[in-house]
Length: 351
Image 1 (cartoon, rainbow, N blue to C red):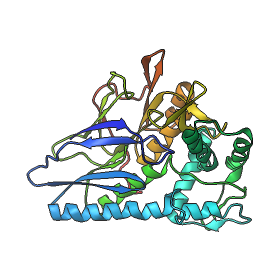
Image 2: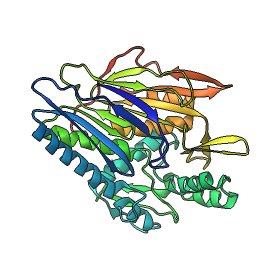
Image 3: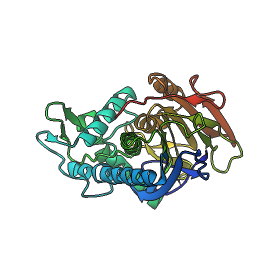
């Protein structure tokens, strides 16, 4: 099964999403291949799987999409009634408040990745992403006072995790959590876990470009994924063969704004409050979607040199950096990036 991976506008503004075009299922004689697309979390989700029968496959799809909908009610920063939004609305809070297991897991992973990236990834970036959404609409940079106020509500001081009681505290006024750089990947991982519980061992989850796969389709050694180059450029990307792994691309190919001759990405550096300059894209392969999603965002902020160093600290991860310089596409990969069509084995334990 060959997948075309590219970026498009739309979806959550905090991410640069991929879109996957699925070829027709080609199931083995004793397997049924089913695929369905639904719009959840503000973007199209396509789930493709191989099951013992079409009936079993359809039932598994229902359970998988129900899991995405459940997580949307927890992790969405667009839904004012989600658990995440209600937590943000309670800031500042004097004491930690208990949160659900899913929100706790995403926030603990987010804090670990924040610390590993020296703040290039930060779940408290919400006040800054809000400013840059306004900047893209108005074509004007955020005002200095608004930028300073937003930056004051972002950073390690703005989020405290209390292991006892699985509780979270937002002590800073104005803090707004934004899980756009990790939530899709986590949800894709959870979908694969739900499918494993139903005995589905060969599945692909495309969360509008955050792609996670379990075991390979029958008769194959992996899921074929063709990564395109920068839009408008002729340079083609690599073709990957993935099993029990995930791949995500982050960049500014579409969701960007040019102000005073400078192109700013929708991706914001939490440390400075400024949009990352481009055009550029980072594709990350990782053992799971949560890691791929967050590392792609962090590496986009850090750039090539620091981004390569970050990826090297995560076992089983690889990255490809692409950018435009003097009208020419430049490319660099980590030493762990597959040189040819290759299988990338990842984690297969339960979440």
